Image (tube, rainbow, N blue to C red; front, side, top):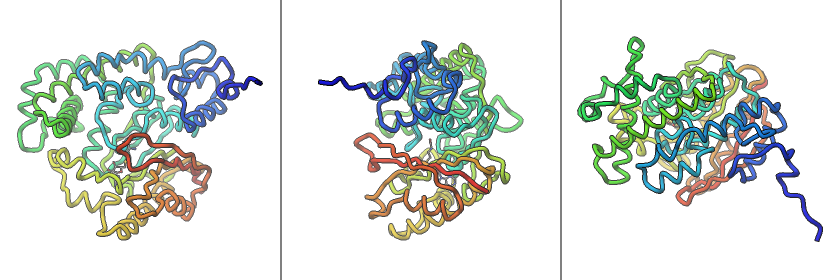
Length: 409
Ligand SMILES: C[S@@+](CC[C@H](N)C(=O)[O-])C[C@H]1O[C@@H](n2cnc3c(N)ncnc32)[C@H](O)[C@@H]1O
């Protein structure tokens, strides 16, 4: 028998080691792309899929290992704990684990995309349908500035908390969260919790938004677990504080420079952003045919005082009576969103859209093919479609397409 050379040895120089668990085809594709486009120093400082280069551990690998996830998740269920520990390099690091937003990006994938697209420190990246602001958090970790826009006030809160928690004084947070029962009494009042919402002239209130988000997390958690919110709130808040504490300690140790972020509650069809001001976009259109974002977050949105009928009108994919109707309105709105993305990006800026393939709930219509047609019609230059499988028994979507475009003006 003639011995065969293992794939990884064929792809990478033997002094370049991948992070454990990098074994999907799309991950190897992205790792190879990082390997081909980043210098050795850049690979050490910012790569997503490398563990070490010439025996020097990468920043990503160090950060993920310094975060003491065993301690953070010690009170969590076995399922949650193993999810985050197994996903320590892909989803569980920095502040990404703070709120379980459905359909969120894999942070490690976003890191790789930012690298491949060549976005540099100090440049500005946008996600116009940002959900839980994964793009902003990941960009900020690389020293890149970011704007996240989402129509949902819950997403605005999540984004503000996750990005603020990258750069705060942990002593203030620990002091404020000392007396949890007083906080809980205030949070349980029926009216909108103004006490916990930040304002321009009261920066300290940004710490209170972390507590508010922990409460809303506990509200969702209590529905899933059928346990009282009171009991879960203490557990969730402790997890939030320890996550942030260990991240801050790790950040100091590896001297990370965090980028700035702007989190906006706004409409992707009419972005409050200047023409030609954005260096890159990474986004994913709503998976509305699989997830009803309003139903999913109803309690939290009501608590925040949102007008549900108004949101239903503005959320892409939630209008229309039958599937055909819904699809027509969805594509119409996506055309306007893509027009806006073209307007706000600079000449030659890269635009990446990650689109879930979901033929079952769309009666056979392929969303990714339609979005590709719309983008081309709007003058975006198509570069590549990279396929990524979606794992998990409960997912109706089995695959996503990572669509790469360039905005040639
Ligand atoms: C697939 S999710 C994004 C998830 C995100 N990538 C993350 O990592 O959390 C799509 C988002 O689009 C938002 N959305 C729906 N209609 C919108 C609109 N008109 N303007 C801005 N955002 C909108 C939804 O609220 C939802 O959070």
